Amino acid sequence: MAVETCTIKDDEADMRLDRWFKMHYPALPFGHLQKLLRTGQVRVDGARAKTNTRLEPGQRVRVPPIEKKAGSKSSSISVSSEAMSLKKSGDFKGDDAAFLKSITLFEDRDVLVLNKPMGLAVQGGSGTVRHVDGMLDALRDKDGQRPRLVHRLDKDTSGVLLVAKTRLAAANLAKTFRSRSARKIYWALVAGVPKVKQGRISTFLAKGGGPEGELMRIADHGEKHAMHAETYYAVVEQAAQILSWLSLKPVTGRTHQLRAHCDHIGHPIIGDPKYFDKENWALPGGIQKKLHLLARRLVIPHPSGKGTIDVTAPLPLHMQQSWNLLGFDAKQYDPIVNAPEE
Image (cartoon, rainbow, N blue to C red; front, side, top):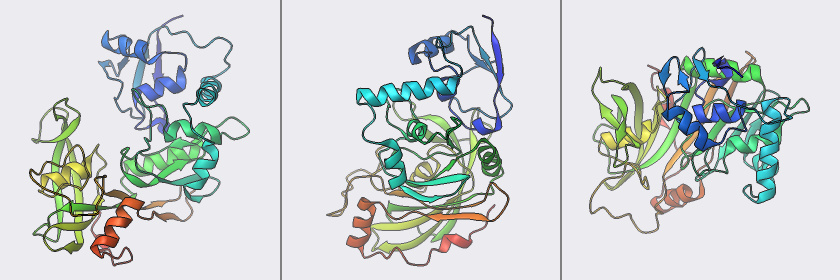
């Protein structure tokens, strides 16, 4: 066996490095992958990387000699076998295919649009066994091809999640997301009321905030690894000066962008365990301490080149309860819909 150099494909855009290895080298234990990364044996474009490094099409991954699972004809077969063993061991609860069908908002031959519930991870990681990406194994077609994620949501964010059912659809949708042709609208319940009722938040974000460096922080322009992040927002409704319902349209798609941006303007999202930092602030009675952030709507050109996908997700139960308590009407006009794209 020799060192391999693998080129990242279009349909693998934005995939975590550990997930990429899981797909192509299913027999490689996570702990061993971490060791290979720590010792610099695995590199991306010649540079050291981490398990959560996001990959881009065209990047080259250095892979040291790694044995593939004996008897497997392809990595996809191995992943499927592993998923079945996990299911038998009880790590997968219930019927994944039936569950995915129960949360489907739209489906055709090319795409699947899910209403991801709060608390369900989109992709796996250290200690995460049950996640959408793993469940998609249950939807393999007769040729063994499985649906592919083309974007992601935080674990505690609910709402619209787009999945490609074919390799071509995945490649086309990945290009659309990179070109920022997709229009994403989120709803959030935040503390206080912004003085400027409609506005634009433009900052640079970098990892490294929080006690363990797990949060995104506001960074300076030109700072190493800092990325520009831009969000439009509008106040839809407010409850006195205590709470407000914001509609948010991210122009860029950075990790925790909306959560960090809301906190940056002094109005963190209710129930956010990572960014809500207001001292001596008590939730109004009846409102649950869960993240009040919904990926409400996604409008994107269809990957076939014909028509548009336009899907809206309903409020999750905890947000619907808050809307009812505050007298907010989810059918109310949303002022962010016509905000500029840039």
